[in-house]
Length: 321
Ligand code: OGA
Ligand code: MN
Image 1 (cartoon, rainbow, N blue to C red):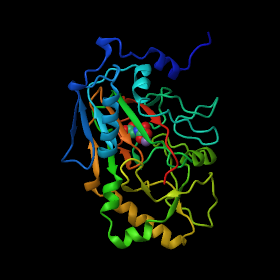
Image 2: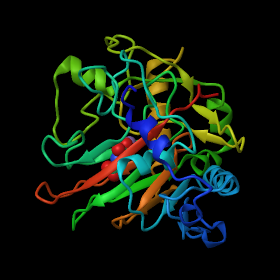
Image 3: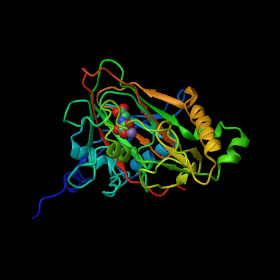
């Protein structure tokens, strides 16, 4: 027989329902919303190595659509177990080779299924130890990720906390006039990894590199452009979310340069208000699973000489609407 890919192996090896000791008792699972925070629910009592019931996965999917971030505590997973659990919720995000993203491999242009996010040289140091500004994963692609998971394996003593922004709350808090002004607008988010390749501006401390905040029409276009709605509808809940990162190059379609850049700057200032944000204080063994369709996430810098290793799985999404 031919050898299996990592993903096929993960599904092949995954525990089955007829192995009672490997089957998660769903009565042990508690999903506790973080009522005091802008988003998120904590999931206690779930061992992601075990086979899960259909009811449990359905409940988790509903909880994710409602709370936008699920925090699973005290996990111990190898890559195959992690893949088997994550893919209950969707297919792995695999961009085409013409769309570079974080960790795209030289041989095939595609990232590995499980991406190490670390500051250890040569071991997944794609984002170094610097700040990552608020973004949605893969927003610049034709089919951005529906969600991603990060699993904490090694943590620095100082800094390196990750924050999530609830972009549904950010949209809801806009005044009616602004909502009416932006509801039908389309936004292009240019691919920061194409800029990095073209300019060779490899800023070790920031995976997303430096880029202008807005493209004016007299500036060259570096990457393919995929217009998506600035206000997108969450596919499960039907709620509207303001879908805009805070620091990479964007452009409103068919919009005046000055008016467009001013509108985007105003929305970006709004979206970063602390009331829409939850900062996660990582513990080893945490798996954080977020809905990438209605959140942004960012990371604080941390000292270069302290090791940090998380593993990320990104799940495929559909065309935003
Ligand atoms: C990512 C990311 C944040 C972090 O891997 O997509 O944004 O805290 N990581 O490392
Ligand atoms: Mn990210």
